Image (cartoon, rainbow, N blue to C red):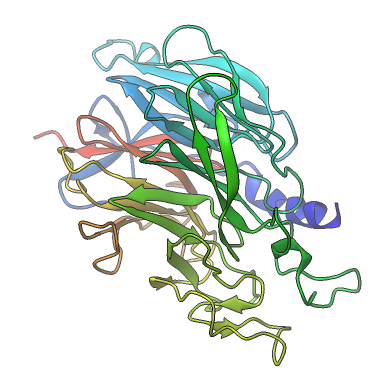
Length: 395
């Protein structure tokens, strides 16, 4: 409980109402906002708190001009909603171009939102995963239940893989595994036993009821895996590292996850470096090194694999939302991967220049991404309460 209260206290200033964007001109049929994107592209403000958004964190496209959005509400239990956003870009009245309706409410700190291989939409609340048909009334068919829902990292992310497999984030209950006297716990109880925290679990789904056929830890020592994507034949994870006060340490990580492997938390950070407090206690040689080290405090909050057939410039790449409130965050990056899904180059900025500028824009807060069938990049921001679209400028 103490860890959760600390996490909420840290999050509170970030969730305060941000100064709004001041549009200048148009981007397609929507107001244009001043955020840096590649030449020939612009950023449209599609929706904000005036449309009822409170804390949006994920977005998926279900059909042209039809999107579902997870709005967590805040960090209190059962304030979340599943929303539907429909667009009519040709409407002459700007108020009629966007419609947002509530499909489900009182959700418990929801985050995950993904279309499964069965065509159903999967929603991850703090303690459970459920699915519903993408059309018709929402029916919450629980697939995985009784997941750990307390502590500093209760949010669930999911990623699908062939073989009816679904990977689930079960984040650590604490930042750095300290005991009651605030000393490093050795061994850390969170990563021990048959049901560890700080892990990614593998669920196997099947036909019939219950749909869950098995659930077990897949990879451990992962502080908080809210950025997960299965690409090629590889499960990628963006690690939110321990919160040192240093500006440049420890690095965030991009990890290639393997069954049974340990990735170091809380004993190790970065490239097998012993974490503070565990000097002369931990041996990091047996842990997995990251595939890439990313800037400290970048806070990767989603990985989105763009289909190779998509008409956007990022086809076949993985987009990453760097949410961090320090200068290393506030941007969207694109990562090239090889045929197996392994990183092939350093990430490149797609959206940036997102520092706060009075009378122009708030500090960027990207939390959720998707690329629609037309090749537009969609971004939701939690603390800014917005839906943004990056699209080509009209000629």
